[in-house]
Image (tube, rainbow, N blue to C red):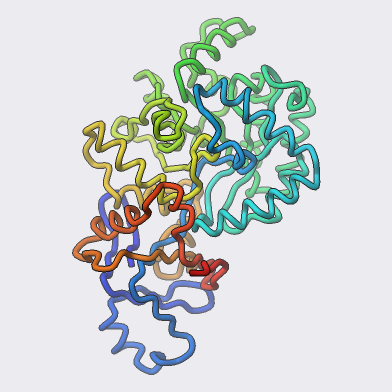
Length: 423
């Protein structure tokens, strides 16, 4: 068992026992201690032996689009072309209620099967698609329908007042489970962002969008906004979001790859959260969009909070195991020290829970928390001398990246198995 605590530390039990009562963690302890302490319970039907496996907390995926699952393996020449050619036409299909309902049921079952029970999710513009997603989602998942009022296909474009009503409906119906989601500054006009940000702040809900994913996007957004009233002197992409009220401690900005020093300082001052999506931003040869590599060292230098996300469907695979492996692999290749598997696990679990403010009851295997965890097979003969070695073996066990989506043997939520894989 591995219980993440921070970037550098975790509790590591080569042979551990997790004690659960009424869906919550009583304690984690070594097997020998458990034998002595719980001698009367051993041998009863409530003892589950999981020999040859790794037990870790359930994942928090802090940036993904459930309505993009069908485009995750489509050709990706560039972000804006990929959106126009594949993503927008796919999201338009969610206007059909039967289609949206069927897709929600299958996607969120798949999400549980990869061990994700928390995070922040983008839906389509359609309110009924949001409703179906909310009904099927399990765990600490925030979901919001994207707001699109300009520079978008006609079938997905909303009038500004209508978009505000959509956001108000989501807040009224789902409260803290709803996350305000202007798609990005290109697709959502500043007045709509400003009006809905005020609604979100008044209700103390989270906000999410995309920031500085690639250079073509940045050039486009700056040219667009400098021609708009009130934005002539705008400094940079981050300053646009500052002016419309989209920054702050409950704001989640995906990607943030190409940032100037002043942007880093602004993000640090406002306590805005960044979500790193390594598989989505990876080179084209690795089935990403080729946007670049997030500088986590710089984020930490400026005190900017961050976590990991899959960015389905910019990212090709839903499993956070693939995200963890990509994070370590890309940073190692770039000779950036500190990108360990222990760090990747923390940024895929407890860091997300801390950002969402649910860390006192979820995010790791701490005493009194919900028993939300996953079980992974380990290769035979895997060395158990450190958490880093065990995690490396677990992530590296898949022969292909696609197999990571099928690696979780079981997912437990509040102490109950809600998914088990037939072997």
